[in-house]
Length: 444
Ligand SMILES: NC(=O)c1ccc[n+]([C@@H]2O[C@H](COP(=O)([O-])OP(=O)(O)OC[C@H]3O[C@@H](n4cnc5c(N)ncnc54)[C@H](O)[C@@H]3O)[C@@H](O)[C@H]2O)c1
Image 1 (spheres, rainbow, N blue to C red):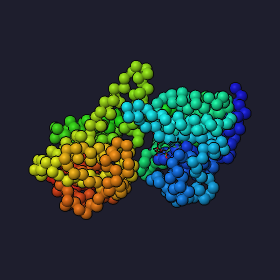
Image 2 (image 1 turned 45 degrees about the horizontal axis):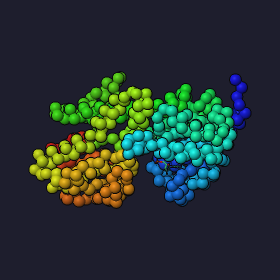
Image 3 (image 1 turned 45 degrees about the vertical axis):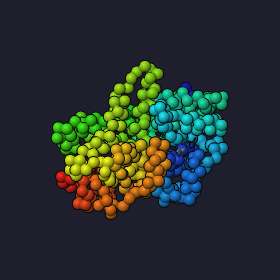
Image 4 (image 1 turned 30 degrees about the horizontal axis):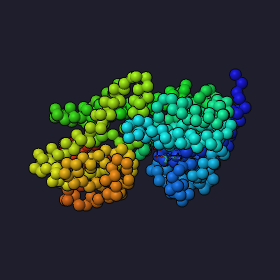
């Protein structure tokens, strides 16, 4: 079948790198993506409803760890990147990529309000010859049943006048080995021409493109990856509690098990799940599966086990205080080390550390935290009472009865901690990994 003139024109623009890309939502995903696309030669306009982000970009100040201010300044000064809150500029974009949040509602259902609002904003400026891409993580069917449907209300048709695709984001904050351009990118489109445009566009910015047959398949790929992590983390968390009762160290078990050169992949236990993805995304599939009257037992069981971890850890902490220091948690001061959900990042979204502090205080203990990446607790929806608390110095360890390692940030002097803290609860096995031992270091 001959290709359409709209397709040919857009493909030529993409191949010549003269197509303008519009990135909507300049957060953890959108800003690094905008940089990768600009670096590959496309002119890029970033859009966000948060004027603070635009001010920061214009001042050449990055607010995302994965993007240096130096790189941001280089792209702006070379004329390849600018950012705005004015959505009318969408009409000048040939490829528009949506990177807005997809959280859960209070009732743990998908909250697609950001995706819908963005789709309406695009529809208001939609013109023939544009490729619209969704990157936000979501359940299979969102791109075709929500984004495309909203866009087609303009009277323009997907596959004929404009094109629609989905490509999941695989950012791994803090990962030193992989970044946007070197992580293989799964792409899909509504129809063969949309897929060809997706392959050409992303192929210009990332090293490896992995085309799949439909947008719903690509949406399912992303959920599968995150469900896989959630279930495997839950499994080792469950094994941790069982082995601990048997006097077996789960970390030692995992270190030995991973020497098997096939059929095993190590996952590590911890104080609970955190971040914007793993605790949330699996429930997008649970919600969609209800439409098919199918249960998602693995997902829900993993959710239950992982969200029980902070309570398990605080139970271990109270037990250790009681047995080793003869002290009740209600009369103790606890220093929680690490507020971010994973090491070496500043991201506290869904961080179990917040829940740990809450649980310690529910039981009458007094908790402070230290985190070199998080100077102060910002406002959060769930932990409003913790807002404004500040990271304390590690110099006053004598003020605390126990240090709880929630996040194993690099750059902490664990040797000094092992020497000076009277009692340590280690949920990350960081002391053993550094060869530091002692009766006062308890794994949990
Ligand atoms: N953070 C990650 O590591 C990661 C990894 C893979 C996938 N994802 C997915 O990517 C998507 C975005 O996540 P994120 O972490 O970048 O979120 P984020 O909160 O860091 O950024 C989202 C940005 O979108 C902006 N925004 C919200 N509504 C908007 C609108 N109507 N128009 C324009 N801008 C709007 C916000 O102001 C914010 O700057 C989510 O679906 C998430 O699940 C995130």
